[in-house]
Length: 155
Image (cartoon, rainbow, N blue to C red; front, side, top):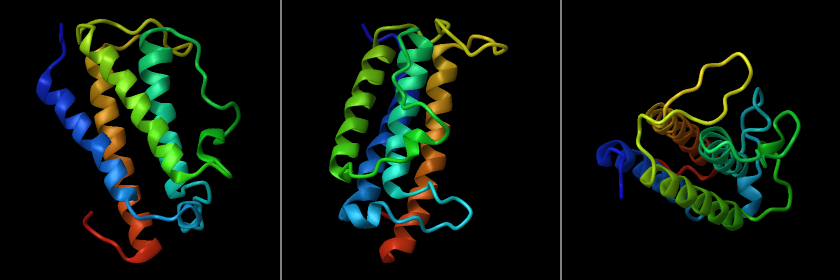
């Protein structure tokens, strides 16, 4: 039984699908290019990896209280040397499918099982809204990186 708000989840799904669209046609070499001197970890590949781990962290680790499997260390989820972009996108899609399953089977008012020390527990509605905002913000970064990579705009 789907207990979540279809419009809210639909907007998040649209943002998620746009990640793959923004990466269409990008080579593995270009996906690893650091184009912003002040943010050397921000690459197309790094952003896709980061978005995957954000989904995992909020829905599985935070909401369900499962172990957090994110790579350890500062910015570790952004550094993915040798991992093809296609694999990163497939892993992101699989993580989004898992998040979608979680959202579909829990009420939006349900509180997460775990929050970092000092932070209040938030509802699934808050998590979905936050992921909508974070994914959209990073799509803007992907727009910029893609334009700097090969001039593609508006994808």
